[in-house]
Every structure is written in structure tokens, then in C-alpha cells.
Image 1 (tube, rainbow, N blue to C red):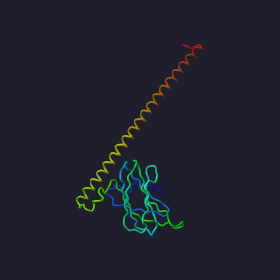
Image 2: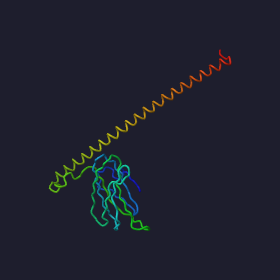
Image 3: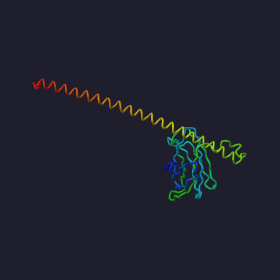
Image 4: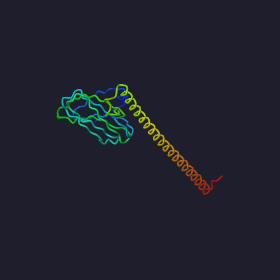
Length: 205
């Protein structure tokens, strides 16, 4: 299994229509996306060159546990869209898995995949009744909420990192003070021992 950071493959998700890649039969290829807690991840996937090999879309949480799987139609030419709401924050993996149909033949399957954060269909029941302007407004709101959630996640992560750094620094200072005290005690003991030795040998000046 090969995991590829989504930041490298997809750059900025909201500005990329899709990333093209190949998956060989018997393998899976994963994209890693850092997702805040309770954030909707929408994945659009389409196979461009598939001779009929059955593949699956797999979501994995930061612990690498599979939390959602979906079979992909091996003959459909249209894009398949799936959404999953994250239950924990962290690096989630979105994978295409193709078990393969033969031990001796591993066809390279070409895919197109895009990842979006945020609910892109806030009102699915009435979406068909909205005109183009309203669609754009709802889409902008959804993306703004996704950006806000991601910013909040980054702030939380930064705060946790800063607190961890402060704890490490405090621990380091404590260890340094302890070492200094030990060195002072050892020096005092050595001086006292030498003084006693000089007196015993009558070498005291």
C-alpha cells in the first residue's frame, strides 16, 4: 500500500477538479487528508481505463481502521460521489482498492479522484429548485464553514503542540536543576574527602 499526502497530489482541494493516478490490480493507493472532527469529507471518483475490474472506495480513520467501504461499479462511466463524516480529528486515508482478478496479470487502472471538505449539498431535497445564484451562495457557505472548521482544527493542534513544548521545556529545566544539584553535592563531597585526607596525612598547610 502506498499512501500519498493529499496536499502534494491535490494541492488545494477546492481548486482542483481531480487527480489522475493508476492503481494496479491487487493493490490499493491511498490519499491522506487532515480532517477536523465532525467534518464531512466528499470524495468524487471515476475510473477512466477499467476493463471491468471490481474495486472499492475505502475510508480509514487516523488509527488506520476502515470506517467506510463502498464497491465501485466496474463498468460505469460516470463519476461516483461518496460522503463520510469524520468522528475524530487527524489524518484520514481515502483509498482505492482493486483486489484483482488474476494472479499473473496486474492491469494498471487509471482513476480520477477529488476530495472536498464540507457539506456540498446542504439542502439536497430542494437543490433542484435553486437557481444558479442560490447554488453558488450555498456552495460558498459550505466551503466557508469547511474553512472555518479547518482553521479551528489548526488552532487546536497549534495549542496542543505549544502546551506539549512547554511541558517538555519545563521537564528539561527540572532535569538540569537536578543535575546541577547532584554536581554540587559531588563537588562538596570530594572537597570534604580531600580535606580529611590531607589532615590524616598531615598535609594541611
